[in-house]
Image 1: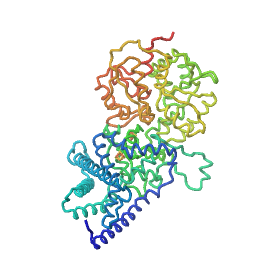
Image 2: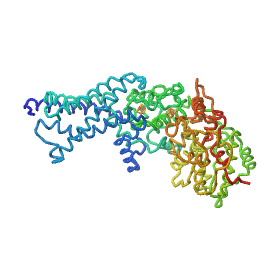
Image 3: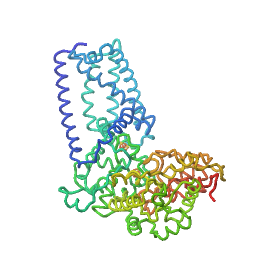
Image 4: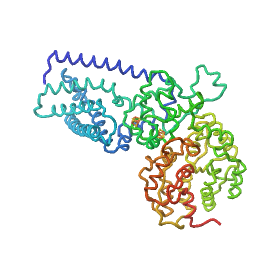
Length: 619
Ligand code: SF4
Ligand code: SF4
């Protein structure tokens, strides 16, 4: 195919003009990000970041696992685009008779062409499938139709068709087809900048810079002297949009509006106001404007409905950190504005009594004496059994603690409890009360140090997560190993310290509820299931389980406060559990047990199941 001088000059002008306009508009978008406040370190553990990039960006693992069929179609399009990169460059150099492909690939060009042809077919299948899902299967995709998506889909399909046409022995209208292909590529980047398809550029970056774990919060420096001496005003929370750091701004611009987060949100599923996609998109609209975050980005009511379950962030395919927005707004409530907090009563009780049940130290001591639980002895005891507030102060949890004590006695391990324990501070932190969290955490860290504690068994996933992931950020060299009791029970069984098998009720059908902070936050799904299997029970899995588990509603202090909503999250989960047909619900979190009690005939902590199944019962 020959190109005239006028055609070459026209092409060069179009490409240069398009690139210039694109760069200018891109700069406008990037400026919104770069105006953000300094952020936490986001290039640490580079190896882990690169592995995540490989899995989630190049292999599209999150996109596919979130929605397998649509995700696979998306992966076809994405991978096809990567394959097409060199072909596209070659396309624009062809009129100038510069053979880029041949220069780079030499004799491999026919193989590369075959690969690009295969990619073109897969991209066509992918884009037609995605467009069909979006524009025809309206019942599955309830969003209003996005016309920019329709134009993008049409453009991509035309790109593939014109490419495949060029591969024919006798292409139809070859020159017209070539120009159509080129013009679409020239226009396409501008469409990307002006639509949700901006994620094509930003998602890989957002995924790379994402925090390593869910709800990975950095402690605020609350030292009064350092705060007073700080040259710039210290941000204590996300009070206004000016407080938003650059990654949060990037997140607002990167959202692909897929609605996965909202579909997973327990509050949204209970017809409450909270809508994770809604507040991310509201953040996009608010970028560059002044004004408070609460009210403009998320309402006070919606913020109070969040259980911090992490389902939204966990499923997001483009690395958006919803939890940083939520904790930022809650910190602003607690530390700056001082109004609108839903758990003020909870926090007051923790401040006064060290626990949210208003329990006294004497009551805890009485329980320890009655159950004959050993006290942790420095240098002599191996494991610290952490009671946490629910096991220590809620009378309904006594059977769970009793069972755990029986199992530990039967195992012969050396264990004990602290004479005094403070709340781990988990919920205080989720309410934005960083000062209370740090006070409680430092008390516990000092107690661990004073007693020489090296290994902790925690029955509560909230305490587990906070002690395992958050205490080390407060104290350099915090070297305490924290295990969840399900992990410890599985270990006792594996090393033969306890034997299971006996016990009644083996004919009963069991189901298991994955706690958010054990599953999504700590990635522990198998240990409790192994214990249930070892105890000889059949397990009927719930429809929403493991990574997709549905919150019990107890998070963010929900287990210990009134909730002013039409439908509570625990009601929805109880419905699902009851419909499973199981007679017994096994929980692995004292708060879940409180919330889900009475969903079916019996609700038991995992420790109770193990105690009931012990072959060698303690004397
Ligand atoms: S953390 Fe859970 S409750 Fe909160 S917004 Fe996300 S999905 Fe909804
Ligand atoms: S925040 Fe993530 S999961 Fe939610 S709509 Fe945006 S891209 Fe989808």
